[in-house]
Image (tube, rainbow, N blue to C red; front, top):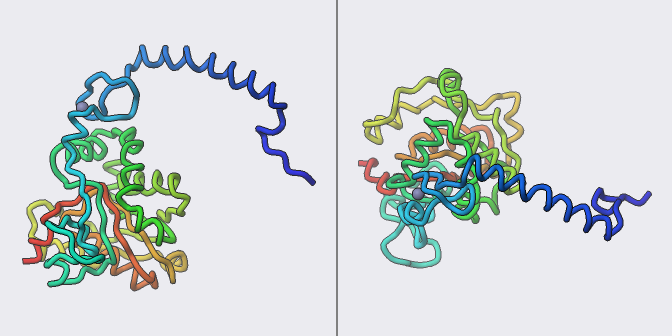
Length: 269
Ligand SMILES: [Zn+2]
């Protein structure tokens, strides 16, 4: 039997008429919507020509992370070295994950945008973050078998109503076609806020905080996992996740985030 796609069911002429009618119908609708909700910068609300963008000033306020990078920690290096370069921090202590990458430093406008996503329910920012993650994580996405968001403890999830890392993983899954696993990795221990903790204290705080659901462990066994989070602060949380995933049989765990505190290896001391 010949499979006919929906768009092939209409003759070419009729398809052209239908698309012209649709454009003629949607055009005024979009115009009316823009009058009610005019497009504005996602950060400062300055009027713009299109929806879902940042104004030039806010865009320039993002401290994008660009090569040359430390291959393990993803932090910028002051100069390009050989093909795979490692920072002195990574050489001193190799992290429990494979490679980390982030879109930008956690400061300036990026800090404000992440704050809008987490605490003001500004989920339209996912439209901005998803293509940014695709760009910054290009190499990691190529080798990944699945995406796993850093989970929240059920109590925190109940209070916040959503897990921003899961939202990012879901949107990245749509963009890349990689499956997102939301229920394999669990946060089983309520941890105190990590703000103002040293790296050693953070490591102790998240130790044994994560576990794999034994009924779903086969979903990571033998697989290359790409762990998704909003911010890498000291790396202690994503390292604890990586240890749990590897103990369950994941062959490698890379980490992709919107932002990182680029001087986080200083916490090692
Ligand atoms: Zn702006």
